[in-house]
Length: 191
Image (cartoon, rainbow, N blue to C red):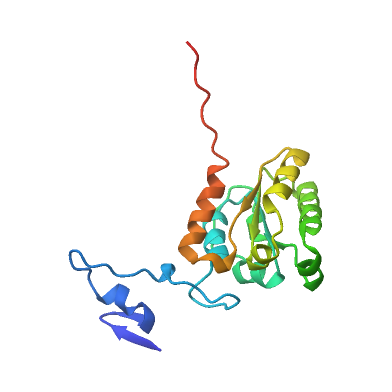
């Protein structure tokens, strides 16, 4: 229920962050540090959702969700981003894992999806997000991405974002870990 606090209408669960000042030495817990309930779509988002929020503004990348279609639908177009060119981030791509993939593994399906997306869009980078299902069945996301990276001569980066292993803040970290793979150190000059 919305309640008026001063001149700002706020949701009840957000009031502590708006109406309370932090006293010296006092910590106010952040909502993004609350763990989510696996399989539940709520304000307390999962690791995958946090990673997607951070990486989605990379507008020329292909963002591929390795998991059920619901995960891709949950975060599709969650954050806007300006672009002067390609906006593949505005499309949602998923391997749409089904029961048979859970039983027999989804690595071949993932590899085929990467091949198809690389062929159609020719992106400079592909981010592949793992979801809860991938963490449970143990698909080797890193191996599939490494093979695809060599095959297509572009970075295909696994984003280790199984939703059940933490909270939205952990997703931010998973995204930053993925972005670090794109950073190349300058070559040292020899004397």
